[in-house]
Image 1 (cartoon, rainbow, N blue to C red):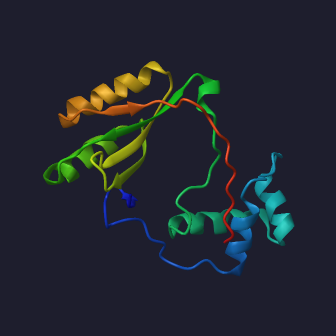
Image 2 (image 1 turned 90 degrees about the vertical axis):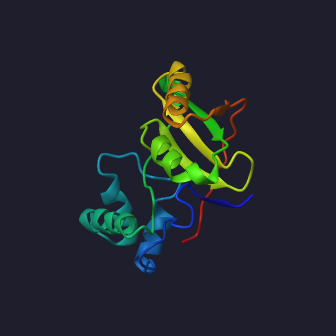
Length: 164
């Protein structure tokens, strides 16, 4: 299956190439982020940068779409929340309207277009397990289309590091 952002061919593209220092920073930020009072200063010390330089470079990488996200990954269930994979079969003529409706909800993340009968896939993230059904019902009301929920049956931890 081909994978695109839910906005189709208008996907996200970086506006510049990262330089050598950006690449070192990206590599240093993967997996072992220091849990100390000033983590950006600790990362900077490893790379010969100041805390302010690390923060400025990180902001620039995000603004220029070299990185699309930087932040922690939480196991939401341990905090009482829930994640659920969801899919919809969206008629092509309704695509933009449905994208706008689905993406308008704060519970929706990672919305992707796929070449499949279920051509829209997204993740629902809510503060409680009951919130998943509420969010799906809200999307069905907004779009007039059924939402198919695929709750997690088993969790795997896969650490992935990409060389920048």
